[in-house]
Figure 1: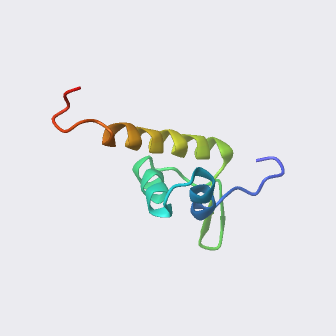
Figure 2: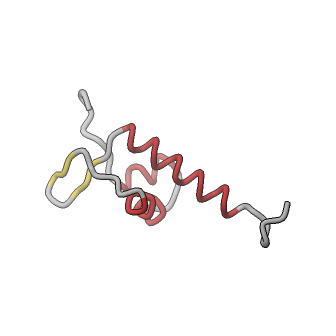
Length: 71
């Protein structure tokens, strides 16, 4: 991470306009390891933020399906 310190879950949530709990769920689900820790604060890289974005997209796609799976 040349020159960038990384972002916390809260900062990622703000950037992606998602609730922090949803971002934390994706981090946990995909077992993303922080690139850096400052005390108890976990910092994530831009590549990890993109993975989180893709995970959130998957949640939105699954939740928009009609009940019963029929189109």
